[in-house]
Amino acid sequence: MNKPVSLRISRIVEEAEGVKTFYFRHHIEASPGQFLMVWLPGVDEKPVGVSYQDEASFAVTVRSVGPWSSRMHALEVGDILGIRGPYGSSFSLEGELIICVAGGYGAAPLAFLAEEAKKRGLEVDFVIGARDESKLLFRERLGSGGVNYLPATDDGSCGHHGFCTELLERRIQERSPDKVFAVGPEKMMKSVVTLCERYGIPVEVSLERYMKCGFGVCGQCCVDDSGFRMCKEGPVLDQEKLKKVKEFGEYRRDAAGNLVRF
Image 1 (cartoon, helix red, strand yellow):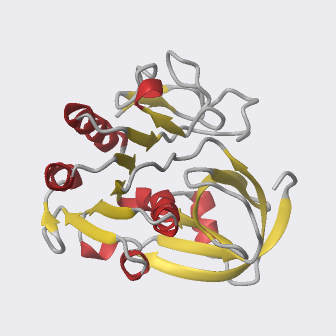
Image 2 (tube, rainbow, N blue to C red):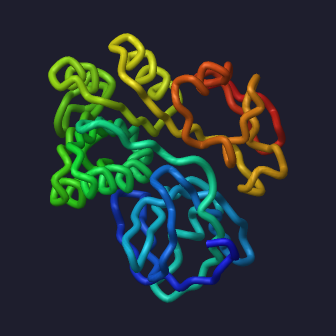
């Protein structure tokens, strides 16, 4: 998709409290991990990861956290949005068994990755962490697609009682995966990378930074010290690139460029 397009919403699915998936009947050629710039006329434009794709349609999943996303959640089937992209780097599938580690809303891009991995014949463990059972995303969708859905909840209401990284370490010891992919809170992703380094397993994560243009011109999403643009060289980074990002797991910058520690 080289030009911006205006598309009608064809379907809306309420995934959990405050999280909705918006489907569009339009073909794009995105790879798992890439994102689209979604323009809500009269409000703003924001980057959103692709959460679903087939030959005739695609979807993005949005959590209601501010003015733009709240207005998105008020939309109905048939409403029109502006879409441009896909942009950014993508995950690299390899091996026979992978583990996806999703922290809450981080499940959105990883659901797309897990389904693409199943199409290629890989076995997929999907470790997902949430505060409680009601916050778990894509449980039926991924389970029906043959993905091993492994929840961890803070209150123990579903699956492992505790952190998803505890569940990940157990699965690493039991299964020796070929590769791990993680999306979610940055402290969680840093723990995942540390675990994978301890066990010698390749890992990729998706780093979220404040983006404005989405295609590498404005420099808003550059990270220290490498200068990598998260809309261009990212958002997906492997271990070697992460070693050049000293702010990983430590801090980010807000819309005005001010440093915000995690």
